[in-house]
Amino acid sequence: MYLKLEKSHFRIRTILVVLLPFLTITIFALLRGTKTFDSIAGPNFGRCTVSDYIFLAAEIVILFILSGVNIMLLKREYQDKLSCGYQFVKGDIVWDSKSIVRFVLFAIIAGFISGAVGLSGGILFTPLFLDFGVPPTVASGTSMFMAMFATLSSTIMFMFNGYIIYDFAFWLAFFSVVGTAAGITIIGGAVKKSGKTQILVWLLAFVILASCIADGVVGLLETIDTPKGEMFKFRSYCPEDKANMFMYQ
Image (tube, rainbow, N blue to C red; front, side, top):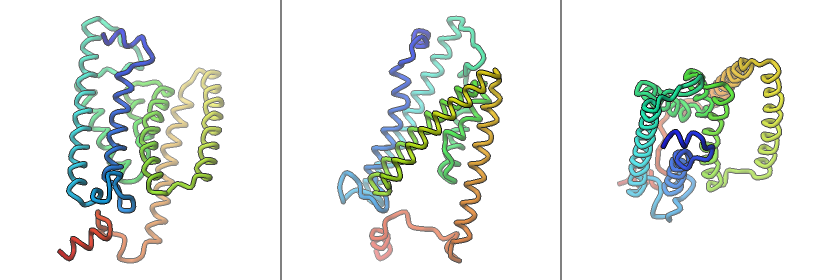
């Protein structure tokens, strides 16, 4: 069954594996709300209500279930390939137990780093794909595909919070598309002409290094501008009105 799926570029299972976590995270984020944005379920829902913690628990459970199902399908697909005598070629990920454990552990670490310092999860996964032997072009494309859904989820939340300046967003998107098209054309042409994918590897390394440096510089500047005594101050998870309400109870 799985070998037949390998012949098709349009795989319902693969699409669902990507869409279901994206929809789960986005829908629950809208249901829980933020400090500045009320839940779409109504004013009685949102941060620091009973429903908030119920939604959070449900989200975690659903994501764990989806992860478990995906791991089970990967292992079953791997066993199916072994039983059929499938010949793994360079660039194929061998989804044995060791590889799955490595990938899951790295995903947890990458998720923590992404949430803590704001680096894109897609950028963080590129070195992992390269370590698994995935060709640089495929590793880069897969990582950016993953980053697209994370960015889309954040964009939806920013839209509901009213943080998006639409004329600025339009020009940012326009120049991003132009830059992406130019990059694909120039770098793709250079790789084809030279026959060496190391060009893309070095470019990816430069982008990751530049992102880390830029993030460090921005963090340092924000730290310098932070008023004395505010740097290590813990802020309330709840909106101010609910935080004050709990404080006086």
